[in-house]
Image (cartoon, rainbow, N blue to C red; front, side, top):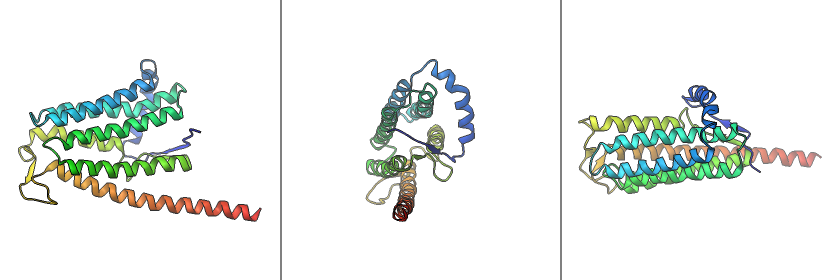
Length: 235
């Protein structure tokens, strides 16, 4: 049965998101369906990945990628809100939304990995650690009804906005474009770009989050199980 009792969101933008959702959800619900917003989010991810791939011809395609990521952020934040407002939230919708999110992230990173911006192995490794965190979040949502959105004050919105700002600034920065930080080999990869560095940092942070949260969740569920067993024995 589909039931998410509590969303855990302690991100930096939480209060701003709550205000915007309160104001705009009723208006959007009169125009768009939740499915439309979910599909819009996936299409924007496809376009973002394509724009990243096209940066091999012009760095200004980064503006298109930034715009697509912003649209994806908007659609991802409001599809569930519109569904709940219209009382159309279902397990099928939750599954579709999450699946589109994962597929969209993969497509964006694939576009990056096939571009001059980032090496493909790094892009795919970032996808792997992101998927591990996502699986942990989804399994805990199923097991406890609690859906964690952010870690350490940062969630999907903060990460998207930060990346959008970086993409917009990059073509104007002579210190970053053509993105090459080192011509030498590192981990068998050459050359190293600023986007590769972002990927390496992201992989390290995501890996630490995954390890910490998996251990934390195992510990929590083990304690819950012990309490249930103890109560059953007392009875």
